[in-house]
Amino acid sequence: MTDDLQILESLKDASTKELAFRHLISKYKERLYWHIRKIVLNHDDTDDVLQNTFIKIWNGIDAFRAESSLFTWLYRIATNESITFLNQRKRKSMTSLNDENQYLIDNLEGDSYFDGDSWQMLLQKAVATLPEKQRLVFNMKYFDEIKYEEMSLILATSVGALKASYHHAVKKVEEYVKSHETRIEP
Amino acid sequence: MYEEDHIEPDFAKRPQNPFRTPDNYFESLEDRIMGNIKVPKTKKSSSTKIIRFLKPVLGIAASFTLIFMLGYYSINTFMLEDTATTELTNPDSTDLLNDYSINLSSIDENSLIDAIFTDETNIFAETNPDEFLAYLSTGLNDVEIYSEIQN
Image (spheres, rainbow over the protein chains, first blue to last red):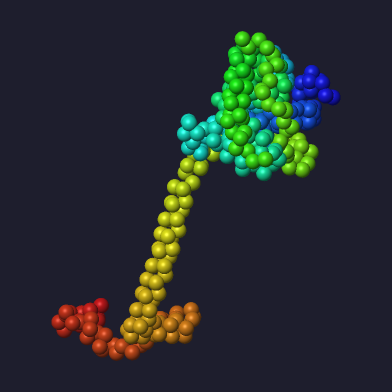
């Protein structure tokens, strides 16, 4: 039972709801985890956000009207939960607006589950310096290779605006990497 | 301007995923999530909120009541002991108490009745008739006494 329609049908029946939700978690846990992880960067934070995401999905599944695909709906919830989480953390850490992305870089450097080399760290730092929307678009397009049409439904933004955001994001990341690449020790 | 779908950054390579998870992280995820979902997040009722609000007040009131009761009990106990000691150490009261206890212990119901009637009998028995007449006639002259006797 891996088909979304079957899962949704089973979720409507109280006797099979729990089992169906387990199938839903099994099917989407890894994709949602990596989507959240690229936004919040730290594993522990990702774990918190992922659990909150599934709790939100459980609470809202009865209201899901299948106007969009289940995958899109789940991604939208995960994205919103991630952004909400980051905003809460930034407020708690009293970070100024100019340094708000420093929180993400600190989060990345403090994560014991990051195995990347110095170049990968540089790339993640470059992405962390982007404005929120551009960062989301860059992650979804460059790392997850999600189509603009689908991204448009998840982020509730037009395809044109998403392409523009991605274009600006790529330019900024390239500039950041080029300006910092020479400082990387071989 | 942005119509091209595949804008690629000018990087030498597309990096592999540099992130990892703890061992077996995904295996236990369903159980942990379902465990969290099953915990009912009940909204606290207004009565619970009132109880929570009143708890400190009730605690303070209970403390004051306890202190008052302890104080009252202590004062009551010490005051009674003091009064009893005073009465017992007073010589008059001690004698009285002793007499009373002796009399009470030596007198039963029958002997008390006997004593009452015996005493009355004795009063009349021990009285001399002449003295009795003299007592009665204290307000009368001789003629009056004579006439009384004759009648």
